Each structure stands twice: as structure tokens, then as C-alpha cells.
Image (cartoon, rainbow, N blue to C red; front, side, top):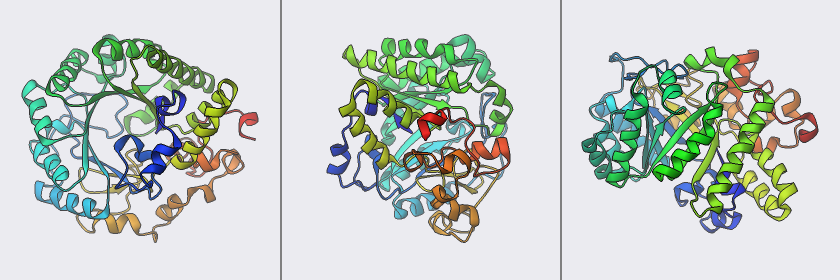
Length: 392
């Protein structure tokens, strides 16, 4: 996760993270990525069921109930373990998490146990009543997925009317006083929608947006041809930086992040080195604190059936099941060869990653994307768009 607004617009300084001691339990949410202990943010795919049919869904979600989901009691036992382990954030996702009738009970329990609970949703089921319930629970944030304006979003979502329903969900969250933001997965079909998304942020006064680079997993594995070329990725990140700066300079700052391609960090630094060398040095310090990709270390995933994964895209490999062993035990057990390597992944990077000058602040980028394309989890990430000159 790369904070464009934090780094490029200077809304966060290295001293901000240092002031809190850089421990996950002490840091406010906007500084968590700079923690030194890297207690994992846990994505819990609470259900596989979903009311939409998104073409890039990493979970292969479907609109039928599953009989192997963790029960309410098993979910509370999981939350007890996560809280005791020091997990700072529980991100509840799906499928569509709002289809589970006990979502509010489980989210409230996580908040009660001292964790920050957030949900990732398509937003279509957030009625005024549901928004009121989510506010009462004490959710820290609601992230709503939009992949463009109405025509393109509804094509991606597979259901006509999804865009308008999501907008209603956003408005209902705002009226209830819940912090809400957008989630946008970039690809060839919707990259031209990025300016329109920024207009939506401005017009609707939405405070946050996360731009996700495409990861080849789940149904998204069929969209490799729809991923941006390296040159297109560079132009997209430059555009996101430009539009973020425009709103910042207008006195309408938004929290803007890119996710799932840690080449974005060095790319921002190299641009700032030309534009503002003093700020570039501060950004380099922050990137070193961030440490790049943290799959299997600073982020983990638990599926609806209790299986534990390195992240939400590595669903084809499980380290164990929380029905058999607590997450805290599974996460710290390095007898599994993949878990051991992920804890110190920089040692195992191959090819141009192994000799890259940015390895310490990128950590080799997305291993699951390398595996999807080459069959080797330690090969270079094919989505890294930095040139040989930039990494040498």
C-alpha cells in the first residue's frame, strides 16, 4: 500500500511515525503501514456469497450460501485470538460481507476487543438502516468498490444498477457519519475512468480512494491480457499523482493510495527527486519504514472456511485452518517452507529483483503475480514497470 497523498503531497512526515514509536498497537490507522513490528492486518473473507458477479473477483464469489463458513462462535474465537496476537485491523470482506446476518455482531465484537474493524463491500446493500447499524458498531471505515462510472462499473460487476446502488450506499454511510472511501481495480478497460473517479471524489466529498493494480488470482486470473502495459502503468500512476496534487492544492485534500504494486514507491521517489529533492529524501525514509510487500508478514488472510493464506490473492495455498489451530500459531510457524520464505522474502528473490536497488523498500513486489505468470513464486513480478536503468 503506497500513500500517494502521504508521500507526494507531503501530508505525512517521517517524524509522524517516529513520534508514536512505530509499534502497531500505538500507531493511528493512517500511519500503520510504517510500523516496525509488522503485526498483520488480517483480511477475513467472512463469506463467499455475493449478490454481484464481478469479472475480476479473487474469491470466485457466487450468489449461493456456503455450508462451510465459520460459525458465529468460531468467528468470535478467531477474533479473541487475533486480538490477543495484537492484530491492529480486521478487514472484513467476502464475497459480500453484508449478506451474513451476524456481520454486525462479529464486527462489534472485534471493536469491543480493541481492534479497528473495517469492511470491504460493493455498497449495494447499505440501506439507511444498515448504515445506522454500522455506525453504532463503531466501524473505522467502509471501503466501497467502484470500477468506473455507471456503464463500465456495471459491466465489471455483472449486474445492471450496481453503480447507482453503490452511490446510494456511499450517501447513506456519509449521512450516518461513517468514514467511507472508494476501491478501484485498474485495467485496460477502465483506466480512462480515473479522472471521472476523481471528479466523483470532489463532487460527493468522499475522503479516500484506493487504486488497486490487477492481481492475477481467482476470476482475475483470466484478465492477464487486460492488465496495463508497463508504459500504461507509469502513465496511470503519474495521472493519479497529478490529480491528487490538484485537489490538494485546491484545499480539497483526499487520502489517495495505490495497492498491490510496490514499484509505485520508487516511481514516486524518482519523480520527486527531479521536482523536490528535499521531500524526495523524506519519502525515501518513509518507504524504508514501509518495507514494501508484506504478504505472509504484515498482511494475512482467512477464508470463510477458516483456511489461512499469505494474502487474499494466495488462496490456492493454505498454511492451516483456524478450526484446528489458532491463527497466531499458524502465522508464526515457520516449519512451512513458504511461510519461512515469505517472512524473509528478499533473500529468495530472483532475476532482476535480486539485484534491484529498491529491493529493501519493495521486497520483491507481488510473489503471487510472479507465480501466476511463470510458475515460480520467486521470479520477478511481471507487473514491475521500472526500467533496468531505474533499478540498477
